[in-house]
Amino acid sequence: MKYHCSGCDYIYDEIIGDEDLGIEPKTFFDNLPNDFFCPFCDTHKDDFVILEDQIHSPININNLTAFEGEHFPNYEIVWDILKYHFSETQHPNDENHFIYKIALFDESWDEILKHNFEAWADVKWEFDIDYLDTFEIRVFCIKDGIFSTGIIER
Image (cartoon, rainbow, N blue to C red; front, top):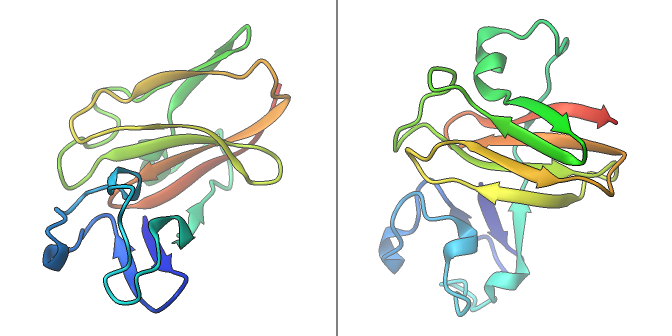
């Protein structure tokens, strides 16, 4: 993802990092130190704004293209637990192409739960959704962007 400084035109890109500041490529914004400030105008990290990427949504969730299928998790809801995973062959998982976050969003498109992953990590997790009647799963791929399941109703 990319983050825009609200005080100037500086953009922090997680994929690129910031060589001038000694920040390695693929360093998540959330992993930057709490005392991170914009290198140009000294705006604090808390005042950066996420630059939203295009969100890919399938036309037909029951008939995914190969590209869509690569980015949609297998999931099931057991009681009040949402369990999801990617099969070993479903999505590439190396330092240049991996799922780096799975998040749940409510009907107002606010992020309510998330889990971050590193390259080569086994992408599976579960969320307690006992208080959610509707939600959306979003998959964040470091190479291909954001993918949405659309609203899921229980």
